[in-house]
Image (cartoon, rainbow, N blue to C red; front, top):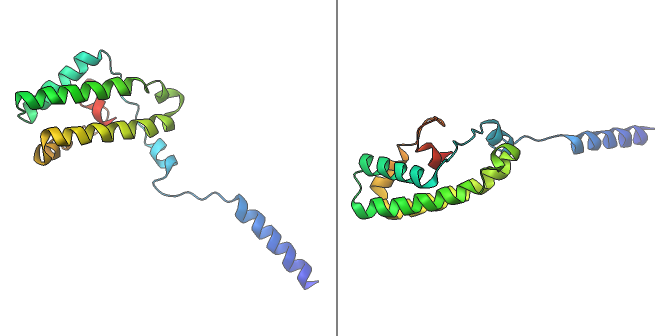
Length: 140
């Protein structure tokens, strides 16, 4: 009788344990909960040019650095525009595709700007996705 009760309790416990949902802090649920839709890119050439102008003045870029920055940002925005449709339909997939794009851009910018100016660039990150702030296009 004890074995039967023990077996039933064990099966019941295994059943509850197998159906338990474990939430890992910082997991996909937390990322999506804090997801902020990125700004619309609009005209890629104008947006990239505006971003290059802002970075050129705020970071005191040379002509060559500004041109290389413009090229890198233009390529990034073209690639990003290809995944913007996922923002509303599948934010998780958007982030999976956006993060490598952003890492690639940041790697290029670090090479163009150098470590000190790249650190200054990161300090320009808007606190949130602010409409009208062109730099939001690089961070969100």
